[in-house]
Length: 115
Image (tube, rainbow, N blue to C red; front, side, top):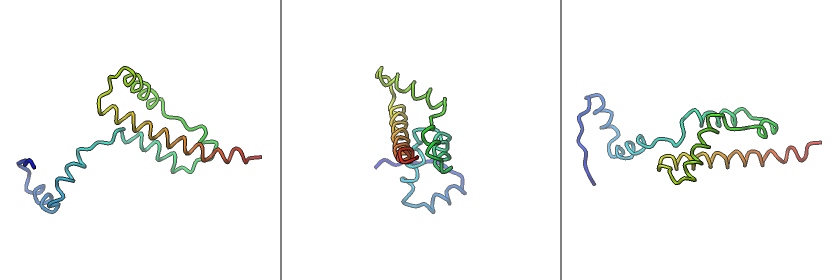
C-alpha cells in the first residue's frame, strides 16, 4: 500500500492520532462527495418530513433548477458526453425519481378509495 507523508499542525496531529488505523477510511469518506448538492437532498427530505397529504404528493415536482440540470444531463448522456461525476449525478436523480414514483404510487390508493 502506498504511503503519504504530510506536515500538519500539532493540534490536528493529536486528533489524527486518536483516529489511529481508521484514518484511511476517514480520508476515503471525506473525499467522497455526494452526487447532488446538499440543498437538493434537503428539498426532498423536507417535503417527506412535512407529512404531505396525498394531494401534495401527487403535485410534488422537482424545482426548476433540478429540472434544468436533469435536462442538461440527459442531453449530454444522449450525446455520450457525460463525465463519471455527471453519470453519478444522473443516477442519483434517477433514484430520487424512483422514490417519488413510489411515494405517488403509495398515495394513489388514497385517491382511489376516496369517495
